[in-house]
Image: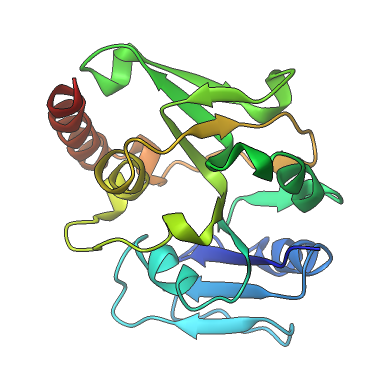
Length: 209
């Protein structure tokens, strides 16, 4: 059976974090927390890596290189895994790409307008997309890349468009998760982050076309 490591990244959404980590531990004993909050404490048997100052969301990519799983899951701190989620990912590991619970297909140079979202509970089969996010699953060969310039607002695009643009990416079919509603202060809603994301996407979309 392949070994799977999980890296959860957090910096301020702590109210549900203990339960989320417990749920991941029920799936695999190899759970890491990339923690930039400066205030989370737990007695759970995880590998707890604290960052100060906060290096941003690229911390998950750095920590992923320290894991020893044959596959690595990088997870946001607002997703609760349900029993069987890792088994669902392993079912499609033969696709030899980066898998995710959410994804987007690219259809033009505007991120907010020319990309279309898909989510795992809506697809009947693996759907090839241009990027995946929220919770991702990857073999180790897609872990190592230069993190310079990998800002929080664009870290997933940086990984998929900048480091591994030709790697196949798929949203897999599964209902073994719960996604909590984005809070008002999340990066997705932040105007500055949205602008940074648009600029990065546009430049790389045109470069690859």
